[in-house]
Amino acid sequence: MTTFAPGPVRVSVPATSANLGPGFDALGLALDLRDRLEAEVTGSGLVVEVDGSGSDEVPLDERHLVVQAMRAAFDELGVQPPGLRLSCVNVIPHARGLGSSSAAIVAGVWLARELVAGGRLLLGDEGLLDLAARLEGHPDNVAPALLGGFVIAGQDPDGSFYAVPSEVDPRIGAVVFIPAEPVSTELARGLLPKEVPHADAATNAGRAALLVAALGGRPEQLWRATADRLHQDYRREAMPETLDLVDALRADRVPAIVSGAGPTVLAFTDATDGLMARCPEGWTALQLGIDSRGAVAW
Image (tube, rainbow, N blue to C red; front, side):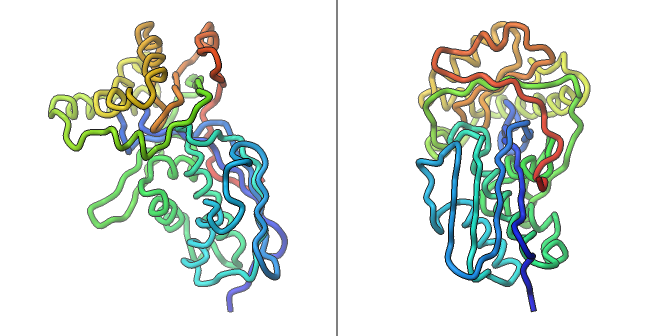
């Protein structure tokens, strides 16, 4: 008979940036900006408490994304608890291209597994990644949120997901420029064409390969390696100020990209002299390290 772990369990999950320029739906990076969550099994009902980002917007019932992910993981584990209490302290901004939904999904499946006695034996790390990727629809954000660091992720023809961590040179950090207004992922994806020129696809393949090398120890190649011809410009209509900032930074040879589906701009750097001052009025600039830990108890 399946039993539940006594007392609350806690997890912190990092923000993530996907695509990283040419690595559309394949490359993702964990950033040192973390949501913290706590959950426990109760006798009945559901209580959801949210502080921080999105606290006045997200539903506080079964529609909450963390709760949905927990329910899916409990189904995988073959059990549903009689009641749940969930508490979230959110730091990752919502709908800004920094992986808030992936952090919620990873947190949910991780918490559910920890709440079931023997959960790690019933649902291993590969199963946890597969479930999180199925819930999100693609693995490029959930993989670094779960594993930390820089991850190359994708889906095999049989439908299974894979995630391969790769090295990040310790000299490399990031500055993110976060606009005040969100852009939905659905809107941003809807602007992408069904087909692209073969030359653009070939160029991006080369740049994505170069980006792996650049992040791993050749940071002087980051500007060249972050050039994109597959998705960023197609999204300009939804986020013109974002693409204007990317263009302006890249004109000065700063390796800047749209973070995920936007509208946040991420600039790789090994020194931030003057870069924070490039933040547009009304936006927020944060200097962040690369987070190597992924989802961890706190």
